[in-house]
Length: 546
Image (tube, rainbow, N blue to C red; front, side, top):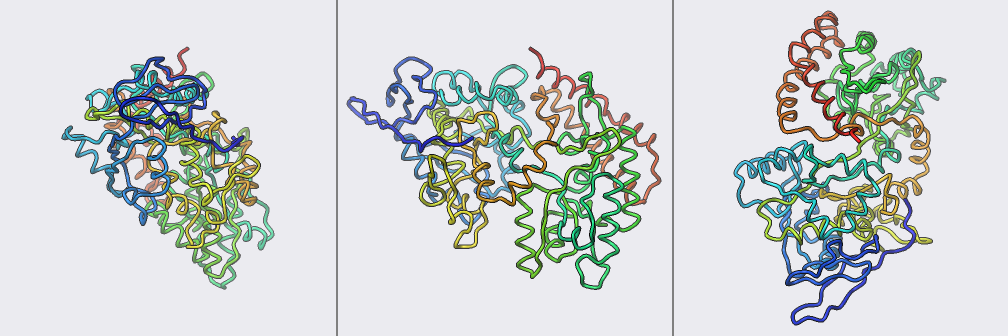
């Protein structure tokens, strides 16, 4: 995952009447895959190079920068450099991230005057592809995108996850497999509270009950008040599902859908083991060990409780331990948030599900007048080493420097003079964008910021190492995209299923309704859960076809 050297752009001067063209680095070391000369306005690259159109403007519809003070429209350093390297100017057609999906859905419904490229505001690209609003990418990639071709060969399962049921590729997705081990998601606990109370880290559900009970009753925050909230989950009911690890249940990223040993998809929320988990959570709630607002709390509200030094356990990515520790330190408390090993049980080894493998979708629309330029731009930004250096590390000399041939983040990034967080600092330059980019665990020839982050932060490295052997693939690593019929059917049925399930399970936990598991399971069946299982099975079977 390390970079062996700093990547240089080789400028190839092509004698023609009109232009000198800029070439992008091609780590595959091969000629343009088409093997043919370009059309007007482009030139064929030499070994290790790929031609890119010059003087072309492409529009990109996407959510604006997640660091709001620095809009993508404001000429950020990363994108200024990429424009120099590709010769392609991007006209950012952006909307604040919270509004983007609704705004772009309206534009897609109208189906006219679409940007050249878009971030797809839907779970997958199949619907837009069948409507003809986005175009297939296979032929374009074969002719103009050697870097993407090389990446797909290095990451075949991730590439397969991007293909529609008809076998075509309609959109690119960000590869996040490299974050799974470096920034795992799990249960975070106040280690300083454990030490203060003389407790060991909990392993079983019984252990967790005893620790949460002690957090409630033994005043670990030391203010003489019984104001502690032992457990306040992020992601509401889904967050509480992490405790299902002790019973072999995959309730977080898999959301309960998981293959048994014979490859048959089960819905584990209907399992008797899930019944036992709900009984245990009900016990916790009755004794005041779970935040009473767990079904409505936002991340902001959980963070507020952490800052006020009253929460002992939550769930999140491990990078948030630094955020929580910093927030409490600013409030005068020296806290030590750490990831706990996942709960284990009789016959079940604890596990956390891995994040990924892909995130979001990015496509070329039917209205693009320059699809060749668009795929070449993607090939540089998404597929090349140099492009991914910009995406992952930002600007050399400012956000990172090369040390012994490897990128190392600077103090400007990790201890920003303006007080920006690590992510904010990189995004203020245009890195870590809302467009497609790669942090791959399989294609180690491409840069990946995660090892560099951990190298400079031993605190996070220790936590990542602690749980790396208990991470498992979720169902998302095992299935392909649904057909349009499956997608529509699942979306329609799951709306009522999810509403009923969340309301009923929360009432079970809160003690507002007697726990009648047979009625719960039968109602799910009456709402169509068996059809959803069949759809998931079809996706699973297609993905595993030889």
